[in-house]
Length: 346
Image (cartoon, rainbow, N blue to C red; front, top):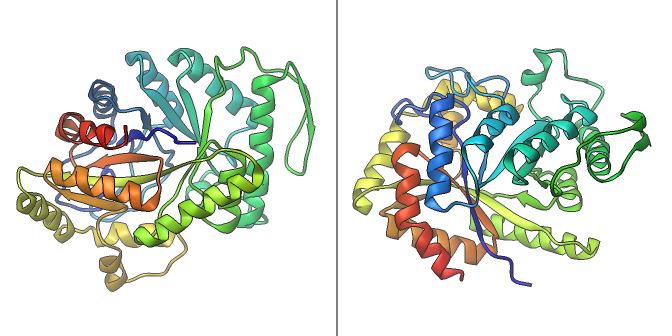
């Protein structure tokens, strides 16, 4: 069955966005920028906007991601100033009681008129959660996904059953009620790429964000997701992220991207690598680079061709756009990139 392509915008919910550089346009992670980006994304014809959950930054000269808004409450605000676009928030299973989380997302769904989605995170970065006493050192990576699986099961049941009894390894609830129910089942997504995370994403969610160091790795991940979903007898949608750098000419866009690369905030990249549990130095920071995702660089027409080829070659169902400058980038993509992609995949 052919699945229509979906296109979204990853909102700049934390300062610096998704380019770790001192030379990018200023993104402060504040409400006005996020509100305006979401309104522009709806006007431009995007299908969804998403906000990540972040609790601690990476330091460096820019204090990258050091200031961020909370995802669910921000998306509630965005739901109130939009009317069509889907609003996907993020919650960490190790932070939020599942009954509270179910109520939060149901509330977001009612505010948005049935447009809510939830990006589920098992909790990866120790420093973020240790600072608030929420890190359980006895839970290794796979056990955190075991916890998240129970958590997700409880959410789904609370959204459809009048009352729920559940006794698991991590959560116990008795005759638990959660009303009102969502207007429709919220879309669930996850970006787990480890073996256990991948299994969770495909088995429990409607869509999974995948990636790779190159197109071959991305295509392989998409194929594995589809194969596992087929084995489980369920559908799955695959999504990727792409940073789009546009210019009036390809050369102008390339020069802009090179300026961002030259402004690499090495200290912030080292902080990011440390959060991944990777020891680094200036050499590894430069090897990581300023860009956190794959890129499409060029005129809007060049970017559209690159994205179309990427989606076809990797067999991806949807793309979440990231911009260096959301104020100009979102409307430009709506005028000159999205129409070409819609036409290509009609």
